[in-house]
Length: 129
Image 1 (cartoon, rainbow, N blue to C red):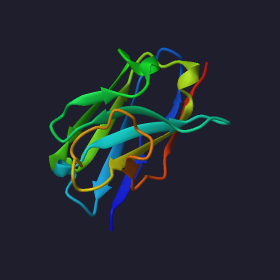
Image 2: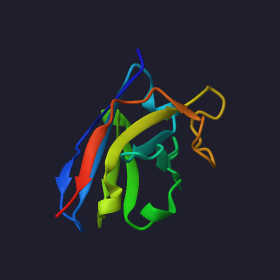
Image 3: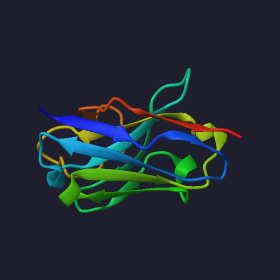
Image 4: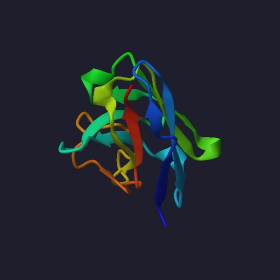
């Protein structure tokens, strides 16, 4: 059974940092690109970052460039989202998801919509003073 479980969310002051984890099970993480997404209250879910099977990173959101980065540790079946210089507008539920399909499963798409499945349950990140 394919499963992704996010953790590491919480309350942080503006300018602070958090590292989220996405633990994968039920499939071989090494072969897949993994995307991070977020959904703020009243807004659509948006793509944040993606990491390919070869560790290439694609940013889906311009607003996180230079502040967020993504990494993976296949030995631990875990993908991380490091978030620095957090702003109130980063407040959202953060999700990870697996790239869909077999062909190209290790590559990050140019656009996130419709290209990921096996969503985790999400972890809340609140940036507030």
